[in-house]
Structure formats: C-alpha cells, structure tokens
Image 1: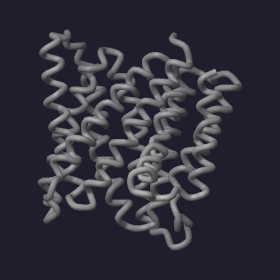
Image 2 (image 1 turned 120 degrees about the vertical axis):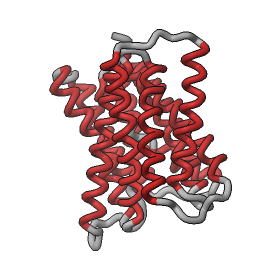
Image 3 (image 1 turned 135 degrees about the horizontal axis):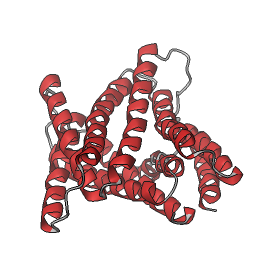
Image 4 (image 1 turned 90 degrees about the vertical axis):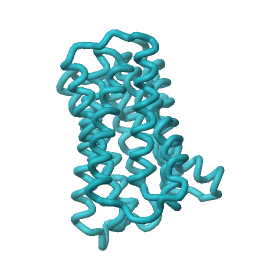
Length: 281
C-alpha cells in the first residue's frame, strides 16, 4: 500500500477541485438554474471521458466494476438534487454541515468494518477531520432553532447518498479509474437529465453552459483524484480529507468575492490542517 502521505496529497487535490467546482456552480446559479448547470457539467464531462477512454484504447473492465460506478453516479446525482432541495428550505448552514458530516462518516464506518481499526494517530486524525468538516460547513445563522425537520431529513438523505457514492466509486475504481469515471458519468447524466425533465426548471438559462463546463470539469478531476487516493490508501482517510472541500469553496469566495469566512469556519480550517497532518504521518 502506498504511503499515507500520497493518499493525503491526492485527497487534498480532490478536495481543492471539488471546492472549485462548487464555487463555479454556485457562482453560475446566481444567474442560471443549478439543475441546468449540473446537467451541462455531467454531459460535457461524459463526452470528454468517452473520448479519452476510446483514444487510449483502454480495456473495458469486468461488468461488476462498471455497475458499482454506475450505481454511484446514478444515486449521487439524485442525492445532489435532494441536497439542493434541502438547502432551499432554509437553515442552509446546519443542513450543509449535517450532509458533509454524513458524507465522510459513512465511508469511515464502512472502512472500519472492512479494513479494521487504523492506528491511534490515524484515528485521532479522523476524529479531528470529522469535527473540522462540521465546523467548516457551518455558516451564520446555522443554529438549529427553527430549522425545518424536513430540511434536516433531506440533508441526511443527501449525505447518506454522497457517502455511499464514495464507497461505490472506490469499489468501481478497482477495475480501472477512467472507465469507472465514465460509467459513473453515464449513469449520472441519465439521472440528472431525468430530474431536469421532471422538474422543468423555468427561466435562469443565461450562461448556464459556461458554469456547467467549468464545474463539471473540476468535479470530474476531483473524482479522479479521489478514486486514485482510495486505491492507494485507506478509504476512511481519503473520504475524510476529500470531504473538507467546502474549505476550498470558502477560500475562493473570500479571494474572488470578498466574502469573509466566519470564526467557526476559520477554526474548522485550523482543525482541518491538524487532521491532514495526522493522517499524512
């Protein structure tokens, strides 16, 4: 097994690109439908992945690997739609924090059952990382008072879906990372296009394609780095570090949009640095 440092490094790259993807998608959603942006990102990145796999003449892996990735891509797309719905109900900070925590916690529990307990230092890093994810995802006005119960329920469903996607992508990538990405994108594109047909978003078509291409490309790169990290080291380490991606979104918003992070988020970023140090050791 590769060193924990390589796993942590690839996971950080994944978190950074995922954070950039969310920033691009969020920026575009100010003028266009988030569903259209997501659909554009899924379809355009799928086209690119197919071209790469065919150009390189990569051997197609066994069917069960493709099925793992396809299920992950399909249910992950629906989880994203559920997450957007939960955020629209209010109390975005608490809902996002719950979703982010479950996204990391479910792969951690899976890996504990599958691979056993890690070392004491890694265990401390995982606990610190989960705390960091909770703190980073909090925003002003995140208190639980007045939070719609349905929003928290949908947030929990979305987080469970994202966590399951990380597990399925790890299993699918064992047969080949690029084909796993492609299989996941095929299913994800079908799911999000079905959602668009059902939801029929009205208005907000201006410039969705540009935000979609940028966010979709960054999301695909993040998936690539995550799959590589999950193959080189423990799944729980990769999942926890990758799930710190909101820090990247916050950092970009601070630099480009002059949006100041809250004190709680700054503390969470500090905890994240400590967690990465422990998980890299």
